[in-house]
Amino acid sequence: MLPSFLNRITRHYSQKLQGPVFSAILGPIKWLCLVTAGLGLSHAQTPLAIQLQFDASLRAEINWTPHSEPSLYTLESIDSLNDVWKPVAPAGQWPNENTSFLDPRASFLPSQRFYRVTAAPLPKPNRARLITFEEVESLNIQEVEEWFNRIGISAIQAQTGVKLFYVLYETIDAFGKSIVASGGVVTPTGLDEALPLFSFQHSTILDREMVPSRFSFSTLESLLPIFIASQGFVTIAPDMIGLGDSPGFHPFLIAETAVNAVTDMLPIAQEIASFEKIDTIEEVYLMGYGEGGHSTMAVHRDLESMENPRFKVIASVPMAGPHDLSELFLEHLLKEDQDYPQPYILPYLITAFNNVYSFYEDPIEVFTSEVASRVIPRINGRSSGESINDLLPSRIPRDFLQPAFLDQLLNDHEHPFRIALRQNDVYDWKPSASLRMYHCDADETVPKTLSEKALDTFFDNGSSSAELIDPIPVLNHAECDAISFTSAMTWIENERN
Image (cartoon, rainbow, N blue to C red; front, top):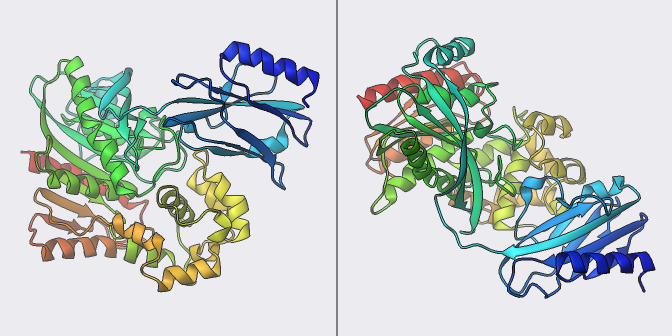
């Protein structure tokens, strides 16, 4: 039987929400109340069965049964009845279709905490729908040139000023369901001819705030969409699903989701260009580095494979990308006694693929207890790659894995993880439009052999439009970025003319 004050709470929220209050549960840390409501549904009065319990670390485990209709759920909390309900952090993960949540903050609870779960109908996908956009900043040609000079790019000169826009739009996730995505659009100013489109795909990001739409002006990659637009391109820079203001976990190196984010943002760029009185032509140029190289390859491949594509690829530059995930890249990550420059990539990759392909239920099945308990929870969209590296027990990725799982990966080429990786290889096709890969020989993060294998496969498939450039062989993965970009932009201008 509930204490009297909890009975009063349940009556209060039942009246306020006009929905069902399921239960209030006494937890080991004073009082925790669960309040549930089905909102915006035809069966809104149907209660969601909800449970709360605590694990050994006093983290709150909250589970609820799915609604009878396809739904998206938001878990909210307050620490006082006078507070305003807010989504459980990080807010960007809600709403989603999950029916459980582990709140690690529960071990730091104040005297009480109240939770509620709300449900909303799962919307039908409306791809490439512009939700909102706003102008962030405007730079004249002199200001763009100043940024060129600050970043040390002298081989390219700004041709125009630019306008920077933040964009929120609709696309679909890895399961074909509607999801919100964010990104940046940069338009040139002062041009009166119809302009082509350019899509820039960013490199690996863990922190959801380090995305193009934030226009931080703090790194080369945050400036690249600006530099590209100043050459006379209507430029998009998708944050990608699960980053920026897109909910959920980023599907790292899952090709289809990158394709969706890019191809659904291209029409958005045309809408914004039209708003700015800029005519566009449906020709597109593509560029990306690292993860962005993999995304660029996937987008180019898929646009050329469409029966009646709206956008025609003129040229693409997939730079330093892990195009062969299932063989060369995985084998590189699992080498014995190898200090890997960015060891966080392996746990990030496994976690992202499991979120889509579901080949384990608990991280302890795959990772050592130290990594499963200390590291995997920190790969949450709020940490940088460097901070994850600092938490790892070594810089040898195979050391993070349970021996049985490692043995399976090394010896079973039909392991579910390897099969999933194979589905996201992007090298075995025949490009028609001009394609130029850039890759430095000293790259130990993504070995140049991956681009070499892609090039050989293109030739074997009968393509003569691809080439591989090593701009400065002694540069590593991080160092090769700037010189590859400047060389690529010079090449693109030649292709354009």
